[in-house]
Picture (spheres, rainbow, N blue to C red):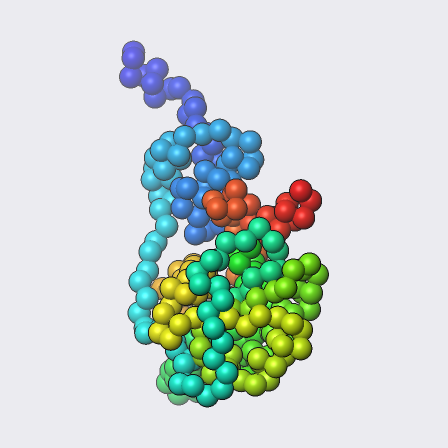
Length: 266
């Protein structure tokens, strides 16, 4: 009789399980910690070990992939202005639009011709990120490393951050695009400090490296894209999702946009 009653008893975690399933349906790469954060946002007070146990029961573990290709490097030696490292890994700030960072990453896709032969192509992403909340303020996407791509995204970032009451700093590595006179002169025109990582030191821009890692982990590794437009569209979708919906523990389980609005309302 004891075991019969146990089998007949309604699942006490049914509502919680359904809520977790709904969260993962909208956020397929959320691990149990981020699911706990979203549950807290929805008014649930639940132990993280319980959430982890339920997610294991429901088969909701996140699949991990490792990077399969070398990191893209835009460094071509000293071809223009090399700015000092003003940020010096002081990435934290509570002032929106004060500290901005940028970098370039390379992603691959494939094109299939009429005979069924596949050719590998490359896409280049140039985002500008607010260090305050990790929000991607602007970005450019192109089939080739492009000065125009970088400059167009820079112009958007300058305009978006023009409301900052303090002098801004734009940080990057020593890539050729950021050494261009057009790039450095544009920052000088706006009285924006230019900052660069030390040569060959990716930790000096780890916040942007972390974003590239997230993007590739969640939409790129383990997936094959068969056109430039398909990959470009997925990157654009992900950046909108990352800015507006993807919550972070360091932001109090808010998304970058939610955190910025929270700061401005405080």
